[in-house]
Length: 444
Image (cartoon, rainbow, N blue to C red; front, side, top):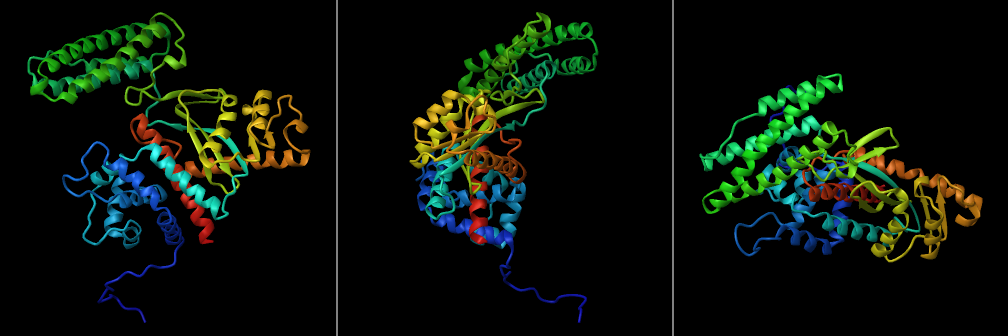
């Protein structure tokens, strides 16, 4: 019989059998088995403040669980705030009582305090426990590199100059509210018109005079900003001190943009990639060219994974070093983290060199496989052709691991600002991926 309405709802919502709940239950068990990680999180949260003063913040264990829940479920901060206040399963997992209501800003502030070093240490603890339980043995590993984009638009000299003008103009307007005598002529509209004209110009001879005018406008704005910084520093005790520091930061970046544009456009010089600035908002971003197919603005990662799919280690690189320079270092990092060298390792062909093979053998690796031998003999790398073929085929599995990170945990593009936050974002995704991998295996 079907009723038109249901007159009375239950006071309690029973937890139903569901794959998501099964995964969260296993992650809850893993976290309870590692009480030693809570002091690491607590140290990050109280860094720079007196923990015995002020209002009681969210406990460290709850902050860690909220962060893991965000990474596992892929919520934004706004969505996470809603579900934490609405879902009984989320509140159970995060150990929140019924009276605890968390705002988006509170969650964001606490999570952004977690450092990459802390998240890396927690991941090592989790993987070490998985080795003790037989989920991963660490005897056979595979290593490969991938890239993570920064949250920036595709850079051009004209867009960088326009960004510099509009940001410095915005800061100058803030400074004039505190010191009205600061001089400012707003050239942001003129800079925008020149940037658009440069983008639409088809020939170099048409772009060059537009660039010259845009550089002129940028230098004028830089002059206003430098004089404003002097006035702010002289009146430091009566104005916002952070404003002068922020303005000085963008002045230095704008000078770099002016210099590289002058060299490249007006002087015809080829500026090396290591000297180029691709964003004034994410100045740490590198230029990474992938086999002349695609240009990535972000950072290169070198990942090492085991047979279980767990990510044993990750190195976030500054710049774009050759893969062959990372071969031995990645295995030595495993030895430092887990106390043992794997017996079998496999790499992409870009990691291959005779010296790397000899060094790997000297530190205790028994079998090595490069997907492209580059002149090396199979007998020098592995015990037999059969072992080499199996290792070479085993290497392909890390592509699935990288795809899992990018699809499930949005590791393809970092949405957090700053170099430190970039590293925390990467290690947060790796920690969540390892927890989900272990949880799925144990729940099955």
